[in-house]
Image (cartoon, rainbow, N blue to C red; front, side, top):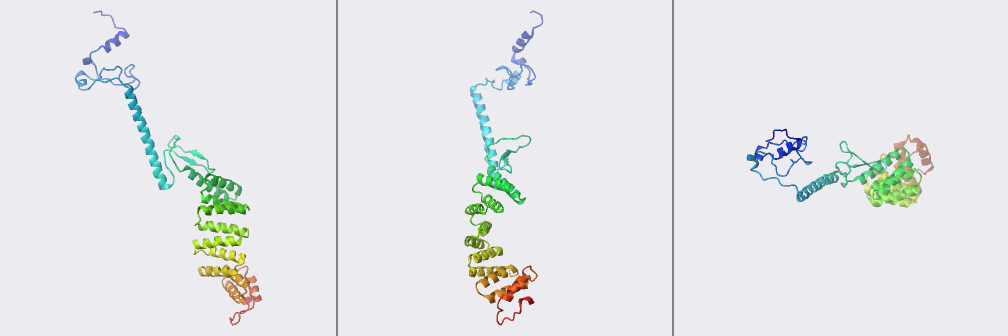
Length: 334
């Protein structure tokens, strides 16, 4: 045999021709050139990495074929699908509980109603998981509009609230808040349209009935405002202010008899409120009942003798015919 040193090519050939019984355990390291292919599998097709006595217990490894690739692709697709399903289920579960879906990343509503990405961890994740982002954006826009309203920036408030209504026409609070803004801008007729829209969406909301009634008052539409206040009184029977507003609407409409009845109901709820007696007395005067008016004025002075209107009330009492047999002296003595 030639004793000359083997070339690099001859060395590799000699290693590949080494009998399986002389093979050593492979490390599987990718750092060794030619030891593994791109997937980390040992080079070659059938050469075992175990000694003969161990490898004989296992079947020889076959080549990686097209069917294997299809199986791997199917498993990967299934894994991705199940991951999306799990994320969707988590999001839907939280949305039913809190009204907002929670996923790996959600779109945060901005005050102007647009949507921005919120990152999960250190990176922003785009997701098509169904969320309540649209509703949340409307809520944020309404809140921003209310903040502008409270700051006296009615034009900005109007723009934000009109945007909220456009995005969510069934959002009753957005309609109602826009109505308040338009009232402050002296656009009362437009405000009435907004209040009516809110009531169509939520007809049993007491505050919506009162708000529409107040706007109708501003335009002097007393009969219509009385209808709203009466419904509000049915929804909140213990609210004194609602009955006071109803009494005023009826009185301005010309129904002082109905107004007096409502004022008496309000007095039963709040007997210590002086303005109710003053309103009742005026209705009695218009009804041609001076004795009852005098008594109501007297009760007003008993409670609010130091009020700014006390002197006016005393003068009015002196102008009325004192009720006979009541023992009441001149109003100036009160």
